[in-house]
Length: 342
Image (cartoon, rainbow, N blue to C red):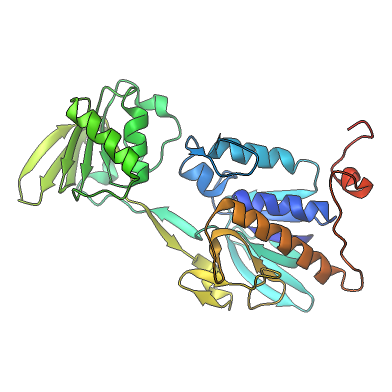
């Protein structure tokens, strides 16, 4: 049994910043996340994609933001449990008993759900033969763009991720064929315009109103993808890899069984403590809902700060929680591990 002040469900940007805000108030935390790397969607879906709306940082990638947040929480006492899903949360008097899918157990004084869209999985490609190539040649995310250098790619999808990777990989891959089931795109207009320019210049092929129906090859190596259009015509496109970007299927997972007030796959909270319908359980970031909610990382940071103050007050109800500034407060400097010169 691991005893801690707070268990944080989710190691995305809001979950990591929650550690910082709790740490400033002298509280420790344990983070649990089902994915195997910290960073949440930033690390899973767009580690190389630029982010422009983090205050004070003109631009950074999802991976850079994650690394900066991990650096920021280094002074604090926290644990990280990745590849585990919180399966049970049971109130036990003034504390909570938490158990993960791996059997790890915690006793915590509060819980913060910072689970983004919940447990999410990419929507899979449903085509004949996909299982044969699933581990080597079919990709639902891009970790290393250079692995596609000099390769023939079929990119499936019509949203931001699909077009972003078309634009990113066009000068790396030998050839790209974009396949979309419609002729209208969900991506931003600028990306669609650039994609159209590349197609007009014959730098990529674009097949619209069509879908992949079969993957072909041998010994686990992909050779081609069979495409079928809405007229029922089929043709074969040479390919070494298929990149699939059909979006995510968000699920609350076990969170839906915790007795919280759920609102269309989000969790209702107040705007004073960002507390759920269960006292002591808070929710920050994309997972929560309140009137005027905006799903932005910077809004999640604000929510994490207020949740931390509420948790401190819950744990020490007889003491007033004062706002202290990291610029001048000796207590803040001590908790941050700063020397007098710093």
